[in-house]
Length: 122
Length: 299
Image (tube, rainbow over all chains, first blue to last red; front, side, top):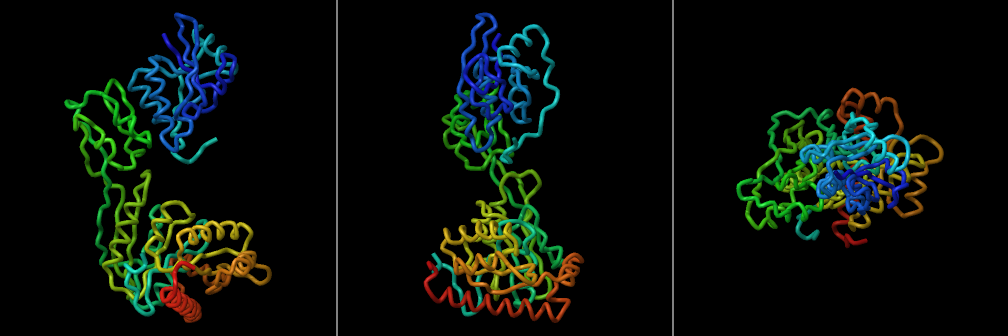
């Protein structure tokens, strides 16, 4: 399976990005091949609808799971419709979170926030 | 562009704006409309219209305002993705080979339907707000209201301005939304004159500067009204003097005025002193509008 993590830098030891829709890169990790590649997030600079566009990129990557600290409602709607499961990241690097996920240690993402919809956020 | 608007002697469209809320746009535009005699008051602050609370208009006619959003005929859609790739607002996602619309992100540009090679996308109306038109004494009161959660008040403001063009009124006062974003630009685009309301603080100067820059970009004639004036130093006044902004009037920081407003009363209709204050302000506005519309507006 393929899993996606929003990351601040395009390396496995990168920190997990606090934002999903506006993350600079996505780590797309293939659990069978045990390799990761990085996708530049074209949605990061969008004026609006970044979460929707970022979620589209996750769906298009063929991933079935997204590991993220949080997720807005529009992005979650896209991912849910495409059967991509959401998990809550913990402290540590992107790769450490991938390892934790594979060990069954990451909980499903409980809270979906209402989104910032042009109001910036943090 | 000004030539398209017939402005007779002593009338015109006056937009009242400020860089932030709570500066006194509604106080000023409501009271000016109340003393002008046969004026039109347009509440373009569609996210939070409050002029009607003062005017309490009667004989109100209501009109729903709609925008177009796309509809999908799934039997024609091949999942080619052209609509999703076209949408610069990211209002469409392709899920299980079909476009999925986020209505509140859609800006009603109609582009998705144009690029669809299968003609699978149509359009339908979506109500985003309303315009109410009533009267209060000799003032025509038109109010735009955007439904909560909707992205853009601009279609409502367009309707308000189009409706204003049909009215034969001595003066039109356009109570603008706060700030200097596109919704304010839409509100002032037909104005003959812009009144900038300013508070006597450094923060007030910052906000005054925002709208000052805006009206210059739009080549609108402008003047300032200083609100909440107390004795002593007034940074907003200093800013006006420094930039050559005509000061058309001063409204005192007065508890009686505050009390009347808090009771949703129109000060100029309740109190002879305030009637005189706003009448004198109106005369200055009238003189400025007359001068500006007679001379080159591109100052």
